[in-house]
Image 1 (cartoon, rainbow, N blue to C red):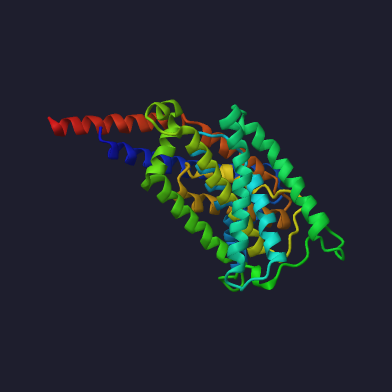
Image 2 (cartoon, rainbow, N blue to C red):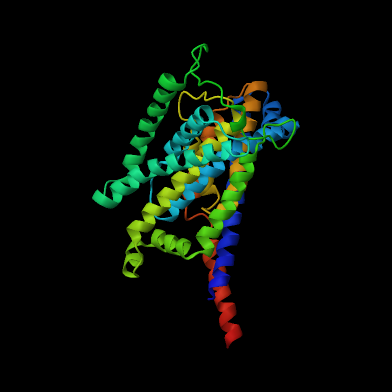
Length: 359
């Protein structure tokens, strides 16, 4: 069977699988609400329709999707190289710290200041991501374990940095001093907080798709991710590709942290990592590790979170339900057997059709 035919079949099955998972998630939301709520119709209305009732709420969906695009892209690159590093959360958080430092301490023109701050955050994110990658390459240390532990190291380091060097002493809560006005990103839609970092996230998705599917490095990365032993015997520098992939992923997560901080805040306010790295895994898996599908997946997860917040404020159902739904979605995404029979039948049918034509 021709490779193009198989690619089309795989794409079709993956799209149907994603739509099926979304439908199951929505059905599960309705089922849980009817089981626990005294006014289920009101709760369901607030969950599904609430996010679209005002421009501000629609903006909240886009705003919430922005950081998820960056962390999901980082996961796509890491998993694409056959690695299981969970450093996206740490790289994202150190990226916010890097952007904070530049936004507070260095004076620059308005157009240049946020660019330099975000790039510095990306560089720090890349450095953090390189630690588990290099330990894996040098001493075969599990990148999964190192990255999980390193996320906590990064979290407490950033909180220490804010507490002892950049804290606003007059504030009753932990936060940094104000950023310089020239450092913040501009809002692109009045009545919302949608900022230019959203456009940066979409652009990053397009660039990463081109890198993975239209360059020799991307081909080498995908070959390495599919079968590292084969890639090694084919003459590819497997270790170098894995390290480069994690450095790129860390950079993406880092600039995502910088863009989120400078686009949504005027000072650093987090007291713990925001969890975007973990949610980014769900987004990446839902997108079938395709960078072009990441914005849609991020928007869907953001829509669910915004709907859950609205439902929690206006009904008797808590927003924790979304965490349950995301867990179920991950189980469904990881189920390779789902629609596998249909995929196989389509491949056999296409092969037979091509054989008849050739005869």
